[in-house]
Length: 426
Image (cartoon, rainbow, N blue to C red; front, top):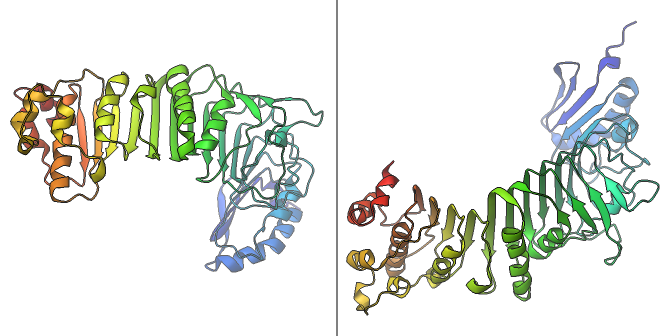
């Protein structure tokens, strides 16, 4: 007798349904109480694995589980561990088996302190996509060392890498001074690495990504610096660094790391840097970001930013947040030869005679004025105007929360002397 379950090759669990694909998706179960659903899965998936022996793809998107049902897919993953080609699981599971299938090409998995003590062996030569979430800060590349304990790990086919290091340090013990491994990813095209705000990274390897197209990472500076020291590539099309937190005593390391990336790396197209509220004043003389194409900054003195712009020859997009304490008198940044009365600081005629255009490639400006009142607002408008006059290649400007701001008024008032402003109408 024909058994339809033998032809089920893919299982897909969601918050409100359980689907099978063979080859079309069929909805077998739909419930509203997801906590109840999760509790029942433990028993249900044992029956499924017994009746559907030929599953090669398992995907879960389940939420709102209770503590009692925190690992509903442990039995199912274990049952299929020797044959899965794709495993995408947004919930942790206890990995109670020695190794994944040799044919596993996609692993997307959420890790926690109860699942990492014994990470199964994995065939790194077969992996095409690797995504690990909730990693502890003590994550180690030793997890992927083959059985013969070589110091070189090769991900021959890996094209996509996504690591999320949460900052938790429970459940695994590593030695900070352990010898560095050599990790090779010759086919990697995209890498995304996120490090928790209070996290760090035990990046115990030199990871070579020779064919990289896009590299993006975000997190605490201490972790970012560790990753930067442990990643090598020939060139990359797009590179984005987002620093979410940094300690004051890391100022020297901040300039060393960012200078090495944004002047020494071979970045072909997009180089983006997103800065947090820095605990120190920007030292313009210490900066060498010649490759930077996008800069997003806040709580940086406006005068410092203006001094920095001439050093960013390839900058095309500037995103800046005005903060009241960091707004100057326009007179202080215009470098006028003759002294002007302070009452003229925001006068259009003063601006039009004091601005010397910077011949930079910046074509887009995005400004967030924040919450400003009265005289603060007046200074912000003057600074916005100054930026528009300063950049002759400007094509678009976006002023968020534009209190008393009208781009058309600025164009009409200044385009005779600054004809590039007329392009903002297009």
